[in-house]
Amino acid sequence: KAHPDLFNILLQVMDHGKLTDHNGKTVDFRNVILIMTSNAGAADLSKEAYGFTRTKRSGDDIEAINRTFAPEFRNRLDAVVTFAHLPHEVIGQVVEKFVLQLEAQLADRNVTIELSDEATAWLVERGYDEQMGARPMARVIQEYIKTPLADEVLFGRLKGGGHVLVVVQGTGKESKLGFEFPDGPVTPKPDKIVPAPAKRAPRRKAETASAKPGASRSGGPKGGSKAAPKTPRSGGGGGGGGTTGSGPRRGSHVPKVPLVKA
Image (cartoon, rainbow, N blue to C red):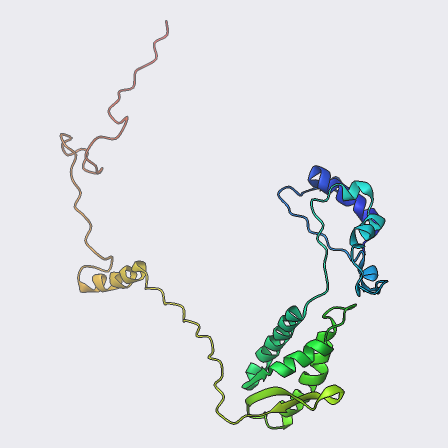
């Protein structure tokens, strides 16, 4: 589907493991697994085969790749995987995927849904096309299940919740999907319990801050606790009573030496 010039850009990625733009910015592609998909050969696969023994064309995938990609591009591919038509088992899994999405939407309305085996086979037959694959499946489920079920949920028997079973009514080409509403209590899915965050313990600083005013009211002047008595200097006599400390100040007893000119 891409422009042919994109194949030349991918050559740089597969050769050197990097990609450089016009501004000189480099993107590293080392340790990368490059998976590319293409619809080359899809038109040939949908064509009918010639002859009486074969009903499908086969062996044309390599020829389609040779027509689409250049030889230097094909030479750098490690492997080529060919896609075939989806089997009915895989289409049944696609139906289950859409039903699970619908069940999640109906859970808010307290409604549960279930498909019978005949209803699943009916959707597989009408929701799959060999040329388009499983793309029509979403439209078929929207037309035959979601739209009529919405009326029942809003205004019908499922207005207050309940269980619905999708079945096939009729036979042959006139068959269609219908709903059955079995009686019985509906058990809704339990809500997720989110634990509340744990409260943090009070800090120790707040406790000490609240204890300080109490200590000042218990006794002593307004200033709080009594100041420590001053200790006199050792060996200094009465002259050094104004200073505190255990030793003399640095440089206080150094005599000044007069400068003598030579």
